[in-house]
Length: 340
Image (tube, rainbow, N blue to C red; front, side):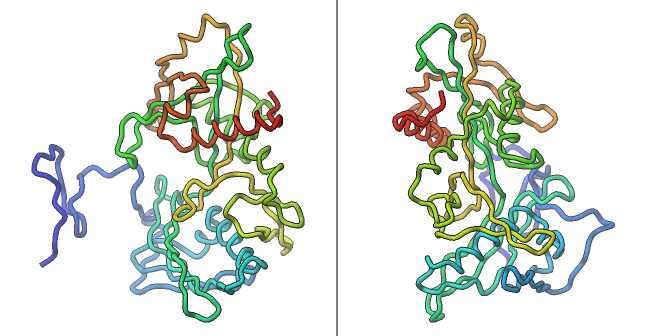
């Protein structure tokens, strides 16, 4: 008899049985979904596809219950970027144990809507040259993101009289309905990190700016970092000293610029690029920004703004993105590299 994971008896919402656990009857907005019926490809057993030669023809197992085609896998930007960087790192001089990628198994797919892949979960089998050591290989791919340190400066006050804008919004994975954090978002179809940052500022804070008004904090910090390879390719801390590659349409390999920071390198591929923006306002308007309601209703967002003194930001939030942005600003300011 199967064991069922039962919720407490005081749970008030209706339940329905799905597979081996009890779940709410209303599906989540981020759900494990399948392709539209017309595009479904049913399999009775796991399928194994082989990656292109540029990725050493690594076999990828796709279990029968996961609706994912080879074309979708190869085209998913997060997977393409991750496999490119990993392949390059394993071929670098900074791999003395001779680790190699042997096999990949897709374990789950989360789609945004009916077709677009949002998250891809997989297990990568990476072993050393002697085939004695296997590295932890559980990976959640979601792609790059941007974090924005949005600052307000009351006019005619000292330059360092800055207020940071935090957004208060529900974060279900964090089990809270009111997380204080800096504006941030995934890099979708904006074309660039700066474009995505500007878009997030407009959507979450209500400030419309051009890309050239943003200060790329992470790029400025990495430019002065000793963690550069011999070709001066910018690498984030924690990456092997190797140049990530991608294949162009003419078959050539192209380096990718990485100027962000990892949010959780033991699980996520996510690299966050941090930007800052200083918005000048009349001093009398400062109070009007407190408790301001913003967000995109059609995306289910309901955001309230919170202002904190910038110097107090490090103790005003549990958001690691805010702390990273605060530290980058402070470090660049101390080093005299902050263009403000």
